[in-house]
Length: 295
Image 1 (cartoon, one colour):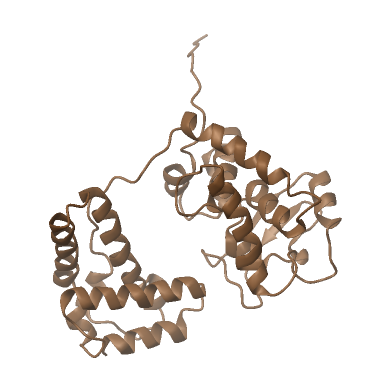
Image 2 (cartoon, rainbow, N blue to C red):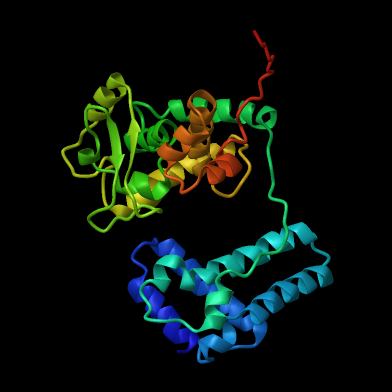
């Protein structure tokens, strides 16, 4: 099996990933090979192993040093390229192979470089969040799809892709059931349920346009055009980070975690472990003092 064969196998069998992720895997795999002097015709076992993975990380750091770039930023970038390339042999993909060589199985689990991800405290984020909410609320009655993107993000914690594929059939008398089907797969591959207040369900249904999907139009509008309008508003409000729209999901997750607990937040967000929720979604919970009273 060559690198080209592995890429082709991924493209034909990775039904669980979005088109954007597919493009990222292709791009990062090309860069991985290029950095190490391999081609797409090189044997996969020679390209994907522990030695080459560590060599790739080391070369990225050396290049960053030569260009006087920040080491931590370079480590984050290098980790991203390696992690994305490793998706060629993710757990779901391994299940589709009859058997993979041991070096590739080891390659899948190579440890990344230590890196400190950027953090923002609640005090730093809260004013921006309030500004974002105020700006997005102005979409109501003016931009139907834009407001629904905002609403589903901040009140249901839906991802961009989930918002794009959200159907009226997902909504019942108790809430919204995010579920795979008709060409759509959730990130975890599983369904999850988010409870909603009766008045919210009634408001949502009042926007029913008679089409299967909650947002209007073709996939381009549902996945890119309408969400991009909301993402721009969030960026213009000064929200840091590259995934502007995802900040709405973080606000939802943090709010659930602070009011109902980390395990409820994990369930509503669809995370595989509570640790993921704690690490990435509980960072804007406002700290509160505790007084222990023993009676």
